[in-house]
Length: 164
Image (tube, rainbow, N blue to C red; front, side, top):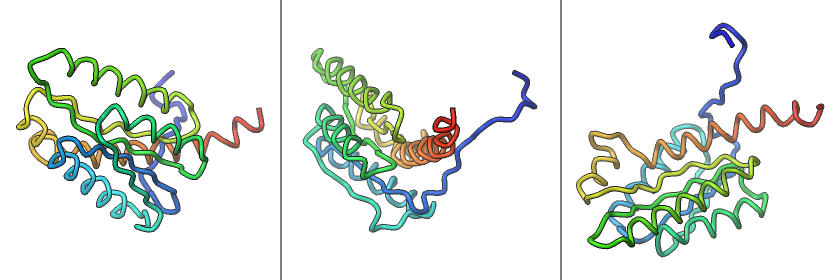
């Protein structure tokens, strides 16, 4: 495919979208910053505050349970998953990260809803801070915009799939 061929790209206009956010409480200073950044970014890009519903869960492993239920409800166009897992001295980090990522990916693989994965998996608290508006951007905002873009691509593709 040449770069001149017609392509489909979503936008980041969140106007009229129904948005679900699932945010972990564990590592709350970081997850609160991710949540604040995601909500502010969504509103900046046209979302109505009343169209955003946030559910708080204990930790990263619980995020996908709620995200999956939100997706099944068909009440949301977008689901943003936010959390933070910081490496400790045991293998627990690896199991939590792998489990959380696999489960969030299962929600995204449904193929009918925009999913943004803003679950940080970092070695240190400082690395997490760098991803909430520091040197590495704001991963909460990025996850929100990614989910919006995917949702809008899906809406554009819907008529193409129905007519096939």
